[in-house]
Image (cartoon, rainbow, N blue to C red; front, side, top):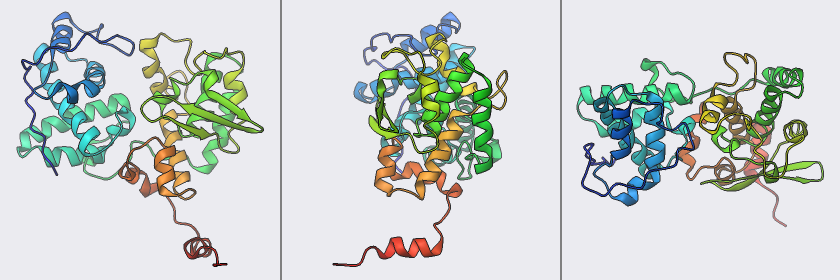
Length: 327
């Protein structure tokens, strides 16, 4: 594995312009911590730092460092990890995908010779995983596992029942949006938050979702899930956000991540539905097409889902492998 040589101390490279606080932001942190984070620039080319800067600041902000010194340590480790994950490993900068335990293990084992530094990096990255996905146990860090297992077949119907039982209130609308677009089209939670009503195209009985952002693509809502779309879109104007549009911008990421816990037990979980979609598609469409449809840049990103996938029945597998008879 290629090791990344990266200083974690602030460099003499000119600071980048202050970013807009349109996510969770860092405004809630202590002033000295906030200033240290805004002024932080690692010893790496600005061209490498700029694409990961907002991601790094958002992740470290979610860790809520209490001192500028701790913020500096966390910034250094998360910066190094984000650079490795997005360049060498080829993962998208999406917290629910990037902080999978097997990814963290690959990084720490390959990048840190010192056991003490490796343990510190694992602790910080594990904390980030807990903030941005399902909690993982420390002893499971070196196992190849995904942050969430898929829903079982008999668990899907109760999710639709729960959503229908909420009526037309915000919880019901958000639940139907999660079902339709995370379960039906495999969107990440972060991608769903950017979907507007005008991004949904109806073609006969089929709905298509135009996904914006780094992995732009058009994905159909699969059969059996499209009934949730009209409920999610009811009353929305063309340019209105589809999910969690009643919540302050800086709180939307936490809201969708925590939906299904606390006040909404039994509600559909966005990340778990995406996992369900990917696992189902592994046995359905060619690998290259799935990499595109799932919003990845490399098949390696699908490795964490393989433990949940099933092989086709032997007769179907043989027909698929044999292919059509030549004419």
